[in-house]
Length: 396
Image (cartoon, rainbow, N blue to C red; front, side, top):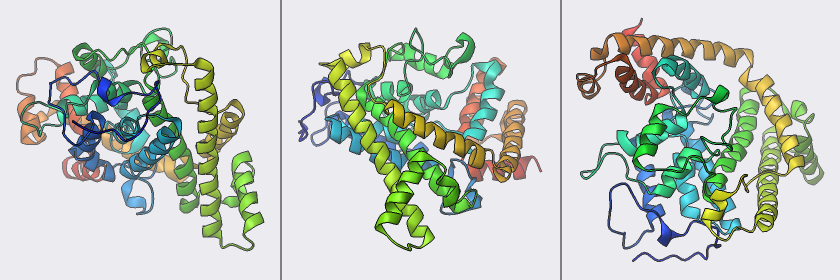
């Protein structure tokens, strides 16, 4: 029987109370169920492919910019810190953090936007649902089952770490005009009811907020490195101004690169400290006595404070203007959108151009919807470099 060395709070997800897996397995001698989940994610093919999937900049633009892999590792580190400080299940939070971007398409959010548009007639596309599809169906290495056979709690966290997906508390901004989550999520929820009308565990909420912390921090870092803005620009924002002032007070005449690094690590620290302090207050007020109490609430408990969130919004607005919509980035977005827009209809019209095992899976399809979902799995799984290579080989 596995040993647990961390004393968890009663509202944390307990190792010995997991709802189990879709396919029953005996317990590991040395690892908890969530440690096994984490290890399976790390050893998956989809996780390895993240090293060639990018966030904002396409892979060839520089070796120092973040990829989905480095981002996922950073999110997992933050999730571990937050979970440990709050008395939560560190292994579950880390698993969800490492898996949260498995379903992302090539070319970051640009590729996702293109696939959402292309899949609109065929049941939609959402990267969280695609991540579920990967860990439940598309990873095919084990003799006894398709997928990774993760625990219910890990699947729940991947599905709804950003909140309920249906019902009165669902995020209508995410699924506008009453639309429902994609077919992929519906199929998996039919197999293994994830209670998608409720909020997720605190470990899943930690993974979601760790994602916010990581990308706010590293997008500032990548934008500085890319020369899209400089430290003087950041001094117009409350949190960076506070950080740079602290650095300048402590270190006189620090060279610019070290100055930037010291300031950004302080911003990182401000975010983590605010989350821990705010979450402790919210948990104390809500008084949950179990993870089920957490799911039954009508709000999340892992949040930034109101004043801090206001300062973060100024950073996000700044990044939107200076980075995500920078002329050089918009030119690249247009270029990679053309790649996705060319590959998807090409494989729809000529599925025989896909590799043999993908082509074989299209042999029995009866309609365009079934074909589109297979093509989606193939295209969404591509790395940036492979998508570019296939476009140049097949379309040029």
